[in-house]
Image (tube, rainbow, N blue to C red; front, top):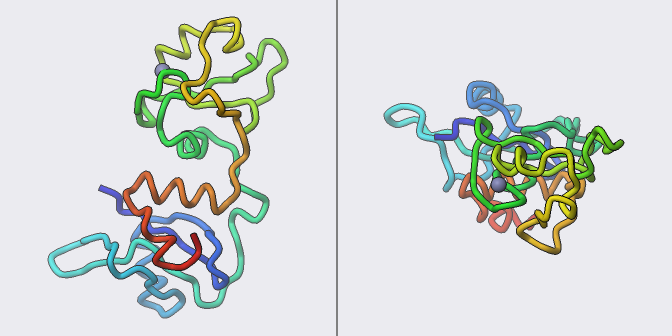
Length: 171
Ligand SMILES: [Zn+2]
C-alpha cells in the first residue's frame, strides 16, 4: 500500500515524492491542488487523497540537478528488477552492482551501476559481466542517468499509475 504522493511544480515538472501527511497539508492549506482525482489514497473511511498534486506557487525543484544517484533511485530506474536474471525484488532483497567492479576502478555512478539480486551479485563477484558470462537480460541495455521525467514515469508505472502522465497531457 503506497501512501506517498507525487508532487509536480507549477510548470508540471516532477519535484518530489512525499509522505501523505505533508501532501494533505499542502492541499488543505491551499498551496497545492489535486491533479488526478481518479488515483487516490484511501486514508480513512471517506477521506481520499490524490496521488499526484501540483504546487500552486513554488517553482523550486528538488531534482533541479538531475535525479540523485542512490540505491533507492537506482532500483526505481531498473524497475525493481535484477538486470542480470530479470527477477523482481524489493529494497531488502536487491543490491547494487558496479558493472566494472570498484576494485578495478569502476565508479559509483548511474553509468556504472545496475540493480542485481543477491545471488547474481554474488555470482558475478569481482568480474565484469563479460568475464562472468552474465550479460544483461535486456541485451541492448546500457546503464544510464535517467532524466527527471523518465524517472517519474518509471516511478508511476511501478505503482500502477502509468495512466497519469497521459491524463495530465505530459507523457
Ligand atoms: Zn539476478
